[in-house]
Length: 118
Image (cartoon, rainbow, N blue to C red; front, top):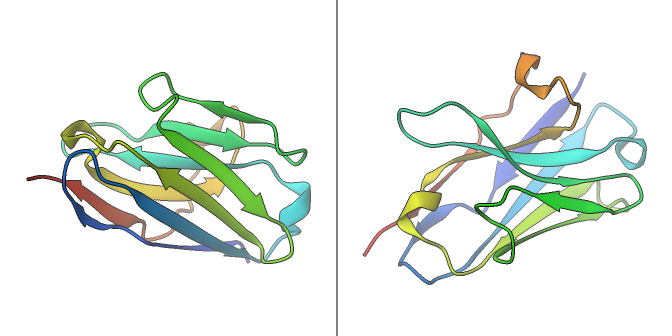
């Protein structure tokens, strides 16, 4: 069955950096577009970044130029490098496959907490 395990979150000061990792299993990783999502306190889950099977990338406007998504198909892992973090980036970050209907996904990992605070 599809499983993802996110890691790498933590507490960081504004302007700092973190690198999130997501280990996926239960499907042919190299054949799936993948994405990072996040849910801030009191808000709906939102799409942060997408990486296609061909490694094309797209980003939410709020993170463009600061975050970089990448993948390693040999390790079934997708990464999110986050630079210049701001308090508004505080959220639980999730990875999952990507689909235009992602908001209807029912299966999610536990996520990893990112807190940006001085």
